[in-house]
Every structure is written in structure tokens, then in C-alpha cells.
Image 1 (cartoon, rainbow, N blue to C red):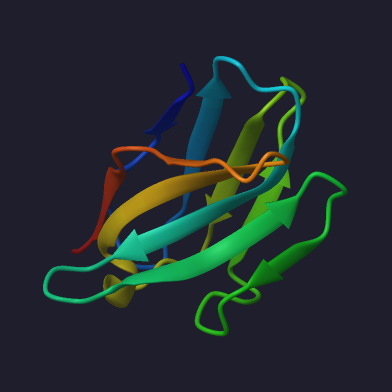
Image 2 (image 1 turned 30 degrees about the horizontal axis):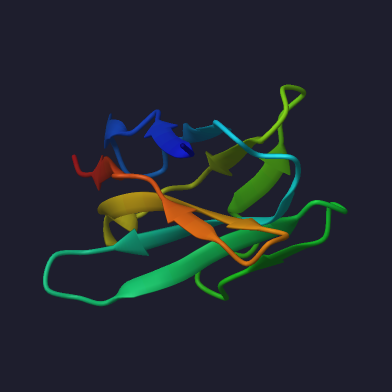
Length: 116
């Protein structure tokens, strides 16, 4: 059984920073890709950032230069460092895990609210 759990969300003022964590556990040998998505109220779920097992990264244009995705020292852990946060970054942030065998898993999300 594979579980994906996000943490680190909360309320932050515009211009502030947060770091989200995603930990995947269970029958995982190695992930192929881990991604962060976000979904604002009434909007579709959009890709924010992705990192492959080899360390390649890509970002949505809206977060380039402000967000950084990285792998943790612990296996199957990724982080999303979010700086210079804007009200439009407010959303539920979801972690996605893609495995070599084609299976994929989602976390339940963590809420980020950017407001003064």
C-alpha cells in the first residue's frame, strides 16, 4: 500500500514564504517523478512543479523564480519551497507520485492561504 502525505500548508502574508513537504511511503522501489499541483476554488488542478528521480525539474511559468522543488535526504521525499507568495498562490496543494511500473498516487492536499 502506497501513501502520499503532504504537510506544511498554512496562512501566510503576501511576500512571505512556506515550505511544503511530501512523503511517500509503502511498496516503493524508486519513483520516476514527483510533482506538486494546486487547485484554487472553482478552478482546475494545475501543475506547479515537477522533479524526476534524476533531479531534473520544471516549473509553471507563474512560479518560476519564486518556487523551488527539491528532493529530500530521506527516500521518496520532496519539498516545495515557496517564496514571495502572492494572494493568487492560494490553493490546495497536492503531491503526485509516479512510479516506474506506471502506477501513480495522489496525496489529500494541504491548504495554502496567502492573505493579509
